[in-house]
Length: 345
Length: 282
Image (cartoon, rainbow over all chains, first blue to last red):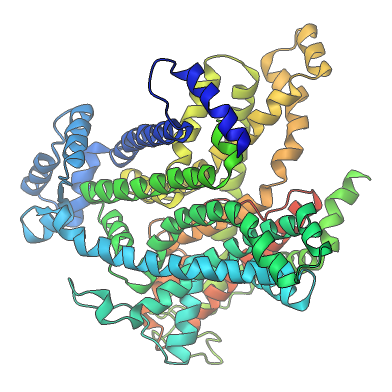
């Protein structure tokens, strides 16, 4: 800490001699957030280009076999396909930034009227957030529990069981874990509902049991990963000099583990967990589809199947925002938790 | 230690042995399976959704096709396409990394910033966007999965290229007047390869995971292809009548990914790069 205090004023003098003293962290946070926004901007170009690779085809792809010249013209007009791509990109982006997510083409082909996307995804965002939150709330304590359990008993049968099972679970795709869970718990044992059938607009909390299988599925792979990382971090700390010193000076093993080792192992673990939450993004899309869970991921898959370009763009952009925000957050957390990094920018 | 001993050392660990045995068993099944299939995998052989019987050991699917025959055929696409995608990723990633790392020109920042942008998109979202824009086909699927790996491979190759390029033998080659392709291919690439290939198994596992997931979502391979992931997706509706049509491909994918990952993990450990802190994103 003294090193930080000594170095900080010097840094400030070099950087901004005339301005008021600023905490070195503020600059770091601002720069990292700005970089995140810049990345997001480039990603938005990428997403737009990706969905508009074959611009002439989109209209006929949306309508499929039902396409009529009049219908095609209507969709083309709706998507502004007659305007150049750069113009369409700007009008889409400026709309998106102002909260106008555009309207779904596929639902228009069915109902005949453009449906605003923001009205379609409100409930879905809430459902997905619920699913993600439940998973993370279980993920954090459980990974620390299993990680510490297995690191403090390294080489024991318990450790072998934890590492073996996590090595197996880590390599399973979510849809296989989900399918096997459905077979086991819903089909063969009849304990839980196999799919998440709830009325449109109803809250998932009216049927909490539909959350069980999706959360278990998401936990399987992510818990295996975080447990391995907590174990690795914990083993490193347990081998360090100060832990040895604490043991030699007669502290009880439990105190050594929880008061000395765990606190220091936790800093890298927090970053690992933040990154894992980021990795959950892909898992959620697949898991929601497996269980028919009415979330944003299921909506994305349906929109891709229907080649509903505006819908894919808006949902994709929302997912990219969450993904990049989690990445920035993970970086910031590490800098906050590891004092050494605050000055070494 | 000889090169062969290094290569086989991973097989000494328990998990490595189990994984190797499992992988070889599955490869054998995938290679020989189609010869043993009692029916044409896409032919309608009987009534739909029958239970297991002597005629149909795993029952029939929703269209009345023999599940066993489809299972025996269905491993080719998942393994073949994943290996293809991973190889393409290495070819592209290594080329970009070599160019960016060696030619200290404007090419380096340009290529690496492009890689950064790709890394900022969740891999599955990238593949879904690609399926929206370019349609669902095998080339799009394979190129998409390959692209997901390219940035991280390029980064590693670039870093080791920069290190290798400072060595005397590279300077000697430059002095001899070797041209760029020869220089990169003969002097630098062989010395970079070891570092990069250490992760090959982990990348293959990730390729299988993501490729199978896209197929399961119905956005990759299209019916009537016999593919394990697609089979799970197709037969979910009939799970109450013939659960084996879902269980068999699900267990085989599980067996495949676990075996390949056990080998990958053992190889990485024997080379001293633990996979504890690594994960190829999904």
